[in-house]
Structures are given as structure tokens and as C-alpha cells.
Length: 161
Image (cartoon, rainbow, N blue to C red; front, side, top):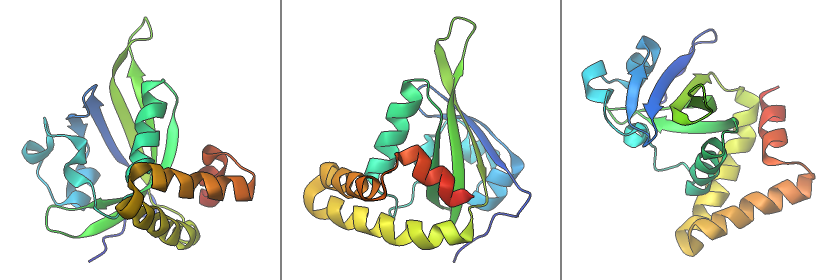
């Protein structure tokens, strides 16, 4: 069953450099159907949904490891097997010298019209990954970006509107 993030709700989480949760807000816990003690110290991937293309996470990790922010549409799985979509903004948390301490993510309700485009696109990437691995998913992504003449960031941000 799909769970829906409220129009004015924000999910906030922080992780260490290895992606283990160090902070989650109440909205995150409620939507993901977990208690705080079930989340803290666990990999953020505890909520990874099998319908998420691996190439999207690969791109996300490359960007944030390079201290660049990234926006992405993400479908997450709840503790009880439900799911929910978010529009995520992920950034590195830096110390005074610019060293990465961990990562910070703020998620909000995605534009429903964007999901009409994202869902079949993600399915195409997933299908490609099943037969050709992550590189096949990357090809589907790059082909779409080339066809539209935009970068990944331009596409994702434009869809949210």
C-alpha cells in the first residue's frame, strides 16, 4: 500500500560517512513505520525499495562524495512492506576544513505529474539492469538525457516544477 507524504511535511535524516543513520525526524519514523531505535545506527538502505534503479543510487553516491548536492526521486519501502515516494535533496555535511563528516537529506512530497514520468522511466532502467547490470541502467539514463538535451540535474529539477 502506498503511503503519501503530506504537502507541508519534510523528512529529515543524517548519516555518517558510511551511510548509517545518525538522526531521523518524527515524520521519517512515522512514514517508514519504524521506531527511532530501529533506525539509528542502521544503514540508510534499510528503507531501500527493490523498485529503485541501482544507477540512481550510484549517481547519488558519486555526487555527494564529490561534495555536490543532488536531487532525486526515490521510492522507499516501509518496515511493514508499504512504500512511499519522495523528492530528495542530499548533501554532504562538512567540517570547517571541508572534510565530509556525513550526509544530510531532506525529502518532500514529489510532484505527482513528475512521478507519471519517473515511474515508467525507472521501470525501463530496472529492466535494463536485470539483464545488463548497472551499466545497462546507465545507458537508459544517458539515452534519455541525450534525447532531451539536458543534464540529470536539469531533468529532475524541471520535473518537480
